[in-house]
Amino acid sequence: MPVVLDPDAAVVLNVFRDAGRPPYETISPQEAREWYLKARPVANPEPPELASVTSMTVPGPAGAIPVRLYTPKPLRKKDGMSPCLVFFHGGGWVIGDLDSHDVVCRILAHEAEMIVISVDYRLAPEHKFPAAIDDAIAATRWISENAVQLNVDAKQISVGGDSAGGNLAAIVAIDARDNGGPKLAGQLLIYPATDFRMSHPSHSEPETSCLLTHNVIRWFADHYLTGTADVDNWRASPARMDKLAGLPPAYVMTAGADPLRDEGDEYARRLSEAGVAVAYKTYPGQFHGFITMGKILPKANTALHEMGEWLKGLD
Image (cartoon, rainbow, N blue to C red; front, side, top):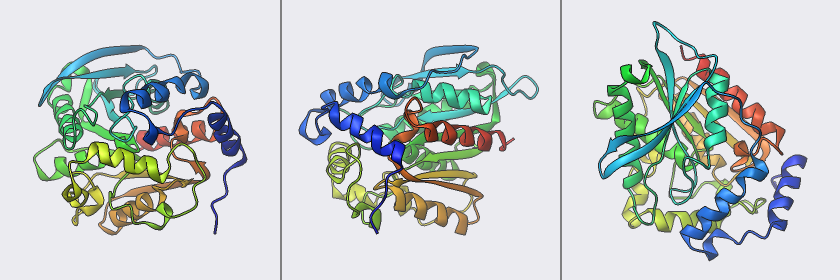
C-alpha cells in the first residue's frame, strides 16, 4: 500500500522541491552542509527563552570536541543538580552541526526542564567510522565524570538524537552497558538509523520525500563507512547487536513516510522483547527530518512536547 503524506507534510515538501536544492548525492559534502543550514531559518520555529546557552569543549580521542550546554527556565533540580540529555544531531554522519539543531535542543531543554548538551562529533568523509561514535562515547563519559561542575545529576543522564544522532545514542547506550560507561537513565531515539543492511520493507517503498531518498542514504553510507564489513558491526548498525537486555529505557519515534521507519520499529520491538522499557510513537504521513520544522509543521512541535514529557517521566 502506498504511503500517504500528511497534507501539511506534502505542502512542505513542495516548498523544498521548489527551492531548487540539488540532490545531496550530486554535490560535495561541504555543499550539502551549506544547503542543510540554509533550510533552517525557513523551517525552525521561534525558540523558547532559556536561562543560558554556553559553548565549551570536552576532551576527545582526537582532540577537543565542541559542545553546547542549554540551561532552561524553569529547571528541574534535585539537591541542586539537574537531569541532562546528551544530544547527537542528525545528518547522516556527514552534515549537521551544533547550529543545525540549535533550536531543537532549545525546545527539548524547555519542554523537559532539563539541561541539554549537544555534541559536535567529527563528520565523514573527513573522519570515517568509527570517529563519530568514538567522540559520542568520549563526550558522554566526560559529562558523567564531570557532572558536578556542570550541575548535572550523574544518575539522571540520558542520551538522544535524531537519525544518525539516534544511531549514535543507541550505540552509546550499548557501549555504556558493556564497557563500564555511565549508567544511563534513558535513550531518546528519533527516527534512528539502526541497520546499514537497508533491507527492511520501508526501504523499498515508493519515495514520497525529496529529503531522504534511497540514493541519499547510500551517499551517506558511502561517505561514512570504511567498507562492507562495517555494515554488520554493531558499532555502526546497533540492530546487529544480538543482546539488548539491560539497556536503559527507550523512547523510539518513527515517521510513517520514512525509509528508516521499519528498522526503527523493529529496534523498538527487540528492545521491548529484551525486557527494556520502551515507549514507541509513530507519526503517520510525516517524512524523515520533520521535527526540525516546527514553524511550518505543527506535528513537529507536538512530537517535541511528547519527548519532553517522556524525559520528565524518567525521574
